[in-house]
Length: 113
Image 1 (cartoon, helix red, strand yellow):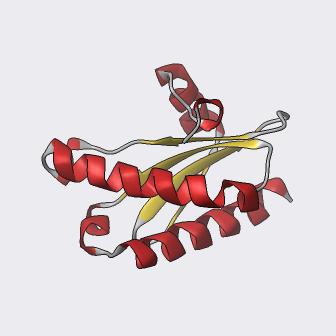
Image 2 (cartoon, rainbow, N blue to C red):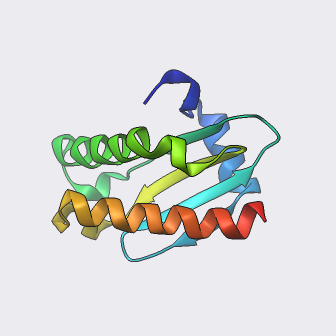
């Protein structure tokens, strides 16, 4: 993901957690906060419950790639934090992508409209 569309600082994540709305499905929980900026920004947060760093990094890389490939279709004007759940380790990439995009689109319809 490009630097312009990433949440990087702890206070940016905390702002989304406190002021955003949360949505979830079996694989993900997302926090989304509308902004008046002309861009969308994303962050990924994974707990150590996932296991060793290689497993956590694999999930983060997959999520970031899904966002990178679909950022044009996801609209503008919000900040989002994506929290994968433990069962995302067993799901293949295609199912992961479908699940995440379905959840994001549902959340955007409810928050931005």
